[in-house]
Each structure stands twice: as structure tokens, then as C-alpha cells.
Image 1 (cartoon, helix red, strand yellow):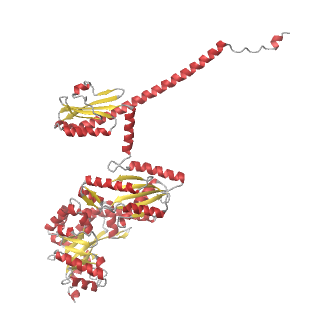
Image 2 (cartoon, helix red, strand yellow):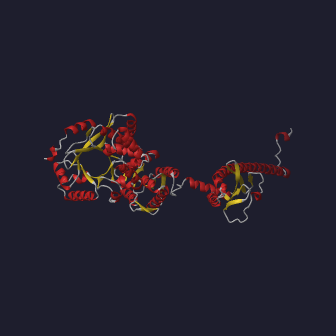
Length: 610
């Protein structure tokens, strides 16, 4: 029997040659993998380099074309100073190392360098670019762009940029900062606001916290901007931003959303009572006057606040509710802080419905109408005219009060159109009050209407088209309107007075304390506000105020109208004090145009003289 077939021999261990072979194979595999990885890294680096180079080159071409186009006028007139200033604007880009403008002969006209560089090429030929418009090295990128003037090449713009990683990174960081910063005030812009609000709301969800959003709108900023100019307006906005920064906490964020609107994002680690105090602190920071361009300016703000998740469950809802609360603050008289309440959404929905309906009415509706309240002479109780009062009845909204309609019109930009509609309707009705009669119609106008550049021409057109003599129109302006438009409106008011139109100050005594406009503006009449009339003759303070107003007006050669006269006792007292015109329920309530025509026929002066 062969025992070797039944008993296999044990395997021999690999020899030294086999071990070396295995090691070489493993090393070769690792080397191949490393070379492949290195090749991939180099390829990605090359792609990234080429992509960065291409992007930088494209951006630089656009940048050079814009600068060359803007600087062409300076080259034509050889305005070295202007050319230098325009080139210095390139310092905002950390990648720009230097730039120069060469005239049509190739001589350096102006240049800018990031560091002192006395060796900056004095001629375009020294650049060594020949006919090339671009030259890209490992560390620099150079662009030569023609400056085109009418029918010729006026010169050459040369820009040299650094391609170092540090410069590129600094430029990217600066662009990121600029993209999130408001250029006027230096606080966050709308883009930063959206990102920060989203982040704070996510944080609140994770930590079971709360976020408060405060919407702030400056009161009457447009008037100041129009009066003092946009440069002064920008300066005022910067002061507002600084004041807000002085009262907010380090964890809070400030953003300017555009125009005169600001927003604060608060991490809400306080109760509602503390939040109320915080909001009032924001309002109080506006109370001290501002000084801009040598002028002292008083600017207040209206603020509305909504909280997440109490008042809204998402960003859009939170923004909408804070905005609603801010408008509620405006409606309540401005210069205040209002916390959002769910009931406000109903009011907001009604305001939206009123806006839509009002737009339709002004285009082709018939729901708007004018009522007239008689003006009675205190001397002989004769009818001297009427005040025109807006009325609006809508099929779905019902009777919309004048205050509500005017408030919505102010907010949505319809107040000027509504004002002209009112004036035209009043002049048309007054023209039908009978030939030979000199009854005047009094129409109230808003600040925006007085500020309309076309106001004077529009008034003249309405009088001509409706056939009403100028002396039968009286324009009433409140003290607030006068003060807001003192400089801009003075010329217009003087021209209106020269045409024969009467001018009156409505609600006298309830507005600004300054009486400068009484000397500067061609007013003919003051109207004592009804709040001073209602307590006559019993209330001593009211008697004193009325006596003083009448004496002041007569001393300045102005007539006095008292509105809100509801009793015979009030009428008798006002007559005794020397008021010239009386208006109120004791004589007649506001009435439609046709009814006023009848009132003219039925009015008997002797009824009030006995």
C-alpha cells in the first residue's frame, strides 16, 4: 500500500522571494491609488483655477467697461480731479492693486494705486501689453479697455488686479458683507433681515423660545425728505439707525427694510410687561430733536410688534402681523407702540376691502357724494356758504365714515386723487347755487395734495371747467398740513390767494404751537376747533381760549369761524366774543346738494336774530 497517497505532505511556507513580490504588489497598488488621487486633486485644482480665472476675467471685463464709460467725459475735458476721484472708487475692491487713465496720445492722465507706487507707468506703451487687452499671470490680472468718446477713441483705462487667495477671499468677504448691509445706514438690509429672522425662528423652535418682531415706520419722513432734500434725509436715517443701536441689546438685530422702515428682531427672553417697556423705550429714543444740515428736525415713529409663535406660526404671518400692528399705531395718532392682537386682522381685511372699493369708486363708481353744512354770518344770520363734506355709501361695505375712507386713502396713495374728486364735485355743485349769489364753498385738502407739483394748475383747471369764480372757493388746511408744507407750499398758497381763492386754517389750536405761518402765509380765516366750542359758555378755560383766538385773529386782520356750534347759548356767546362765521347743528346738519339748494330758499335770517 502506498502510504504517501493517503497521508498528504504539509504545505511549505512562502519563501523570501514570494514575500517580496507581495510587498511590491501592495506598494504598487498604493502608489497607483496615490497617483490617481493626486491626479484627481490636480485636475480639480486646475478646474477650480480655470473656473476662478474665467469668472474673474469676465467680472473684470464688465467692471472695466463700466468704469471706462463713466470716465469718458472726464477724459474728453481732461478733468484730472474727476478722473482721480472715479478711480479712487475702485479702492472698495480689495483685489484692485492699481488703475490708470491714459489719454488718446497714451499719456497718463490720472491714476490710483493701493500703495504708493511712484513707478506707475507714465505712458500706455510702458505697460508692455502691446495690442493685447488682457494679460493674466499667476499673481496678477491686467485689463486694458478703450475709452470711447463720440466718433473716436478717447484713451485707455488700465486696471491691475491681484489674484492671490488672500485678495480673492477678502473680496468675497467684502461682497458678502455688502450684500447684507444697508448702504445708507450701515445696519442690516432686507436680505440680512430675512436670513436673521429665519435663523432666530429656527432657534426658537429648537429651544422652545420666542421671537419678537418690531416694525418701525418714521412719521412724516417723506415731508422732511421733500423739504430738506434726499442728502439730509439720508443723514437723518443714519441718525435714526444710531439711536436704535443705542437702545437694543447685543442679541437683537436691526435692519432697514427700505425707505423709512426699520425692523428689530428680538430674542424674547422677557414677559409681555417687559416687552411693553422695551417698545416704549424705542418710541422714547425718538423724542429728542435731530439736527441735520444745520436744521433742527422733530421725527417720531410708529411701531408695531408681533411675536412667534404666539401671534404667528411662520415668517410671512409674523411680518404681516407686525406690519398690521404698526399701521394700527398710525391710525391711533402715530408716535406710539402697539402690540398685535388677533382682532386687528379683521380691521386689516376691512381696510383692504375699502382700498379696493375706493379705487373702483374713483374710476367709475357712484357711491361717493358731497354733503354741505351751512356757514352762517354772525352779524346778520345770513347764509354765506357751506363746507363740503365727503360721504360714501357702498353696496357691500355700507356707510364708510369719512375718517376711515381718508385714512385708507392716505395709506394707499389715493388721497390726492380723492382730494381732486372732492374739489371738483364741490365746485360743480357750488356753481349751481344760483346766478348772482356769492355763496362760497369750503373744501379741505391734505398735505400730500398741497405737495403735489400739479396742485395749482389742477385747481385752476377745475374752477375753469366747472364754471366757478375763484373767489367762491375757500381752501381749508389744518395747522399740521401748513407746518409740514411751510417751505414747499408757501409759493402755491400765495398764488392761490392772488387768484382770489380764500384760504382758511381748520381746527385752529389743535396743531403746532408755532404761529409763524400766520405772518408768512396769506390766510383770510381761522376756524376755532369744535373741542373749544363744546364746553361753552360754562367752561372757563374754553371761554379764555376762544377769547384769545378771536383777539389774535382780528389783530392779524383775519376773520374767525367757529365750528361745532350745537346750542343757542354757544351761538350767543360766540357772537358776543366777536366771531364772524358760525357753523354747527344748531343751524343745520350736513345735507346732500339738492337739499342744500332747498335750504337756501327756506333760510330766514330773522329766525336767528330774535
